[in-house]
Image (cartoon, helix red, strand yellow):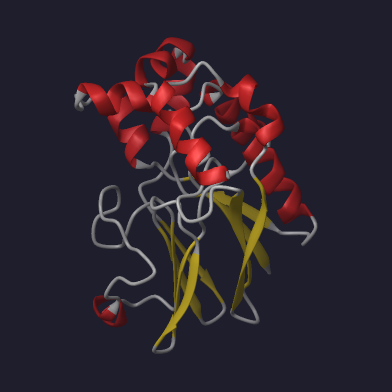
Length: 223
């Protein structure tokens, strides 16, 4: 059994498609999306349609929670996230689709117990786990493998006898913005691998309109 994991597309349909093509090379049996399909870039609707048409199993991220619960966030963050634009492009069917997504996914393959969440096992939507975070509290969890998104920084660690990983972002990375990332897992071998491809810079004009602050972020990270 081989599974693929993608996260944090954030309206970047071109990055999402690139990640799917990477995973197809490994003949994955299932693909999971770990949340934050929407906001920042302008193609949130297209991302949702793509996930739905490819029957990708999806988790809610913090941006889906903001959308569904109509949460108020600071104006600066709201503008940077392109939140009003996103809300204006989505229909009732999109809200229904997102609302059907799970908060977490548990899988059992043979003797392996796998958990997928957006942020962390202790706070599904808000906690940030970085490569240098303290993972000691993960050791008491019943899972053999734990996969996350949210930070846009891919990493892969063996802590005790557990695999703890972040699949990164198909939208834009926060470690090296020149690349996007996803992850493939050979369940029987208990081996995961980070896959990276170039950020689709050639399509960046098609990802607008987006906030000028986002363009400045991309300029800094992609150089």
